[in-house]
Amino acid sequence: MALAFGAVYLRDLRLALRRRVEALLPVVFFVVAVSLFPLGVGPEPQTLRQIAAGVVWVSALLASMLSVTSLYAGDHADGSLEQMMLSGHSGFEIAAAKAAAHWTITGAPLVLIAPLIGLLLDISAPALWTLLGSLLLGTPILSLLGGLGAALTLGLRSAGVLLILLILPLAIPALIFGAGAVGAVDAGQSASGHFSLLGALAILTALSAPLATSFALHIALE
Amino acid sequence: MSNAAAAPANPHDAAPLPTLSLVDVACRRGERMLFKGVDLQVRPGHAVWLRGRNGRGKTSLLRLAAGLAPPESGQVLWGATPVRRAEGFTSALVFIGHSNALKDDLTVSEALHFLARLHGRPDDAATLRAALERLGIATRRDAFVRTLSQGQRRRAALARLALEPRATLWILDEPYDALDVDGVQVVNELLQAHLARGGAVLLTSHLAPGDAAPPLAPFDLDAFA
Image 1 (tube, each protein chain N blue to C red):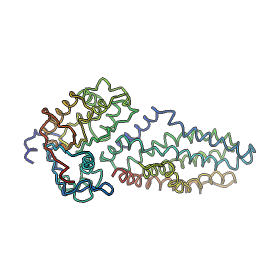
Image 2: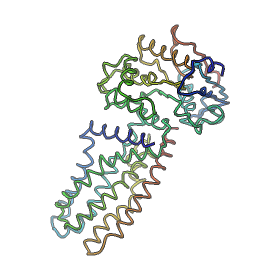
Image 3: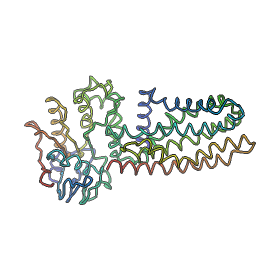
Image 4: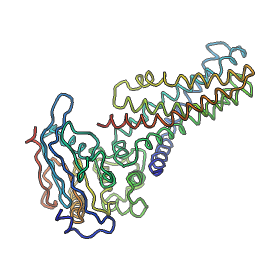
């Protein structure tokens, strides 16, 4: 059964490679959004350091949400989604593959580029590592939830706005614990509690979001 | 089932293909009842040609038959079980809808490879190439789908039919759409061979399939509005 997962995942990566500029846009958005904050808040290193984790997390959240709106739209329009749903493979597997591909294309680059952003906002080394860890655990949650939102809003007009309204509340716990982990390290405490909760959230989302996405896709096709 | 017995023995599946039956099926689109009381059987070795005026619900009926949507009332059965729960139904089904399910940014052979792999059909390079050759677009196999004409896209989508070694159920929405005379001929030959090995076909076409077509039992949807 891992066959369909691999086929869908590799196909989505290949499609992203064929549209490199489009695939890079969320990362560009992330960098631009973060670099606006020093301009708006002022270049005080102390202030920047304080808001850094929150800024990075909120920007990552928005970058994920913006890029996920079209996750199923293309497959729906050209009939690929019908074929996937008729292939006999579970919708769970298809949804998980699509979310994994989305994470690889947008989530992973965000994690990779975060150290650079950290330098920009003058984050200390231990806090930077914590930020990386929290993004590594947190961005898959955003991709999984975003996939659910994309499936729920499939075929609707103004799907993008609706998706953000639907999914942002669900992503708030990840935002709180992700940014909170960095705050804890900055305050000289252990971030393990935050990481445990973030990990639990990631597992819970990985088990439930693809299932809900699969139901939403079946309803969208009816 | 007599036709299944007459069909040549196939090593891949000993059991004959179950019959697809629509029993007293009704379909609603929003407020409008598209059709009701439809009883239709697609037996192995037989082809049904679904006819009806535009907007009569031909595509909706195909989607019901493929299990993509549940009927408003009545049942769609594969053998004796509803299609949406039937074991082995999806692996015995080839559904080619009105859209071709080819990604614009993939090459023709990549797109076909993905569909073959997704549906668990033979997906090695030689088989794919032979299928594309059968449909006459092997020369364009490394071209991006977005550079193809409508007719070429249809041929690429229909190349899935040439990958089928087994007697299966084909549900085809306007397979002849956008094809030239030669393309229609190839599809007719594929249908013929498919019926001969005990496969079943349910298709729509707004044109009469022509003299070279295999025997198609017409089913008029207009009578069920």
